[in-house]
Amino acid sequence: MSTISIIGSGGMAKAIGGRAAKAGYTVEVISRDPAKARALAEKLAAGATAGTYGAAPAGDIVILAVPYASAAAVVAEYGDALNGKVIIDITNPVAPDLKGLVTPAGSSSAQEIAKVAPAGAHVVKAFNTLFGPVLARGGRLDAFIAADDPEAKARVSTFITNIGLRPFDLGGLHMAQTLEASGLLMIGLAKNGAGTFDIALNVDIDSNRLQEGSKMLGNEEIIRELYAAAEGQGTDIEKFVSMFSDEGYMRDVPSGTEFRGQAVGDSIAGLVNAFPDVHRELLNIYVAKNVVVVELAIRGTHKGELALASGTLAPTGKAIDVPCCDVYHLESGKIISFHCYNQPSVMQQQLGVGLG
Image (cartoon, rainbow, N blue to C red; front, side, top):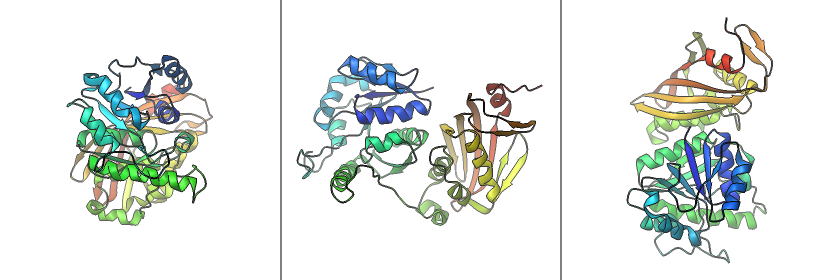
């Protein structure tokens, strides 16, 4: 299980940390005030820890959840302890009177942080267009990212997907300037036109246009979209089905069962009914032209009836963590085959079902 480190103990640290803990990550909370770090760690989940401020963070991804005024200074203080880390900057560098941004002309908070970060660290802008209470409430939201390093961007995209959000790539780190302006836009909208902070930016893509493939989304992004539509939080069965071609199918390899058309959605709905908090943690994604292979773990809590070959299993309240490998073949932006290699025996054993 991977670890995510969060420097900060405020509302955004709590919201992101809560979603990360629920998704199965080990969360390390770091603060100048050790008591605040311990208090937040205790609220998140069993296994969450309080780190030592200034020491090398345990996580490969470090979320900088501090005010803009101190963000660059924090990174400078850490120095080489952040070497090799992916640093996520979530700050909004807005003026106290909300009349503009306080970053140097032609720069952004993320770019200023990158200037003082170790050479081996990579800065990614993300989460700044999301409000903490909305993020903490759950559901599928859109998260926008900007970074120069492709690998760092991919790792953050995977993290965002794993905590139930939908990542959208805006381009290089220079686009952080636009994201930070968007953060100010959201604050202005919340305080004026919307009259509430219970709002979020959303990208509406007509699923029929996904067939444009390379013009809209790459094959990896399409598959990430598919998993996001199947999350227990924010399940969108109609969208899931629409991402298959007319002749597309899903095959459960262990049982040999094939699903086509609406039956594809019914199979996903059945799992969500049995495990309302079902989450697929994407561990590795491999892309070779029109083939996408995903190593993942299916996690959730058994709170609904589960159909098994031996009959229907009543809710047990037990958690599952089932290793799985999915293989997709796509053409023109649509899925033509989805082969799911899961391990039903592992799931049944975790649920206490006898196999013999």
